[in-house]
Amino acid sequence: MGTKSGAYQDVYVKRDDAMVSLKNDVTDFCEKYIKPVHPKNWDWSIRDFDNPENDPTDAEARAIANVVFKDLNDKKHTDVDLSTMNNVHAIKAYLDPKSKHEAFNMEEFAFALKVELEHGKIKDVNVTNNHPFLTAMIALAHMTESLTYYKRLKVMEAEGEIYEILRKLEHSTTEKEKWHEELIKAEQELKEAKAGLAERLEKMDDIPVLKIIGD
Image (cartoon, rainbow, N blue to C red; front, side):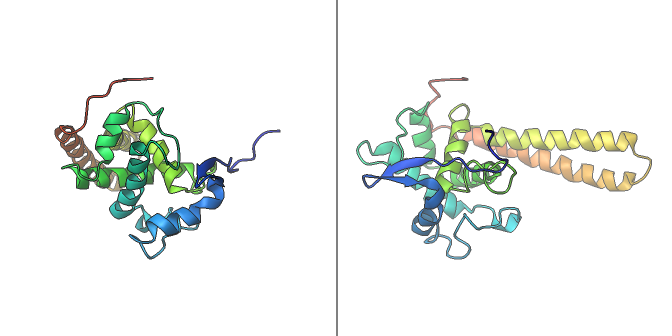
């Protein structure tokens, strides 16, 4: 029997010598780690992430990153076994709260969480149930292949938007002024995205070179 669209396939992790359902753990996790840094609208299981005002904050990203960082460094008592993660030394450096680029990294990580929430309740196929830890794991899976992934994603999206606007201008007989205005906005977004990528590349000096590149 096929899986129904939007169905969440539960994941279990060992925590405090017990197997915990991450489906049921979302609220508990958020209450423990998110609520202290984001007291209002802290429960990701019911938060409306379709509204940009509810995007993950840098403080929330930092709280989640700290959990992952602890698990990466604690070889005895971890929420999830992350020992098989590729390029783990680079990920540790990226998440390190003592990194000299910590503020920049956490702003970027918050964006990564926003992007990967599409695998939760805001899309038709729900695989994370909006669990912050699972969402972070998806983001970090991309970053194990390239720590510039999300900055490059912004550039790619802006370039794609410009391409589609140019197609609109080419084929539209009306609303050309509207699309010219949209083009100006998109070109500015591309400029900012490229600047963000350049800054990311400049702030890689405390992150080890990836040992494994590609699949």
